[in-house]
Image 1 (cartoon, helix red, strand yellow):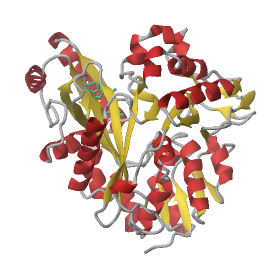
Image 2: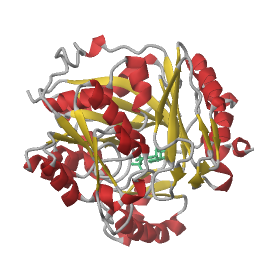
Image 3: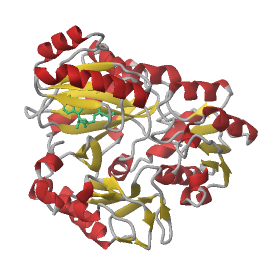
Length: 459
Ligand code: ADP
């Protein structure tokens, strides 16, 4: 069993703060890294130590600079590195090099990441163990002829997907054959530029699915449990905006099947640490695996609230070698995990919904968040006087509300989001309220096309 004294957080913003807090509660000292552009950011001041990573290529590169981050970790004698989400969190090479220095990477093995990190590889793995996947081809398309043939087999409309894509990018819908080759060529060159790999595959485009994902936790001894599902169907540009649990669209039998399939896939690769198995659920209630994320997710908060399990602490404890059943983690078995109540997370961002969700920048003249009964806030860089820069993610504060029922949580969410007073920079606050108050959301049954299909939300 290891005992971490010092953990380096290779990330920024709200998730850096979330990890720092988990470390503090476990009595672990924290090291933050920051780019020049983040020198006034809040997360830097929350850590015990913080060091500038100079990278002249640009503001994002500091958080991607493997050499400098690992050198700093060695110099400051850290025991482990937590990658958060985004940046290097799904980079197997980073994980491998961290471990090669005798530093613990808080996440799965690098070889497991390789096996699951790519959308094609993970679909192949799912098929191998009979976890349903969306009909398509599980190999990179190599020629125009192949593209035509496979698209015909899958049946239009189809989706072209970048194997290495993420964050809602690298996906194109093709409704008719006549557009296929044009879309295929631009998808390939775009994917190459954005993700360093031009591998494109094809799958059937599901018309109005729900996005349901399952949180899993695995220790180093082969024990794997799920922490139930999250409904992440409220999306703009394939990116999540509001997430909640439990899903209001599936019944207990469906829930059991989806969670069992998530466990089946995780067990088949002997999954370790926290991960999320993502599915789409179609109009018939059938679920299809789409990808596995081998890291903490932005929306983990809702699961923590209904299960009472601190997922970030569990990640750290698992990395130290604790079993799920240990006193430290204290998950006796699957049946000991229960869902209590409902939780809804709203991503308040500095984006302008009236202008195609374009990020806005500038000085926060006023920043007063709501609070009160049934509310959890995970803030990033928000404070009065803070400068919102154009360089990073536009997430300002994750506002999570909870209650005994979905409706109770929803009412609290409306109340607290309305309470936020943010001036100086445009936000999506009013848009979020419009979604929360929409009759379809009140029923809890929105699908992934909900925002696209409801222009009135923009009023
Ligand atoms: P990313 O890794 O970029 O987040 P995902 O594979 O998780 O991409 O998909 C993100 C979203 O894209 C899904 O939640 C869904 O809304 C949409 N999507 C992905 N695949 C399909 C598909 N085959 N049919 C319809 N929608 C899809």
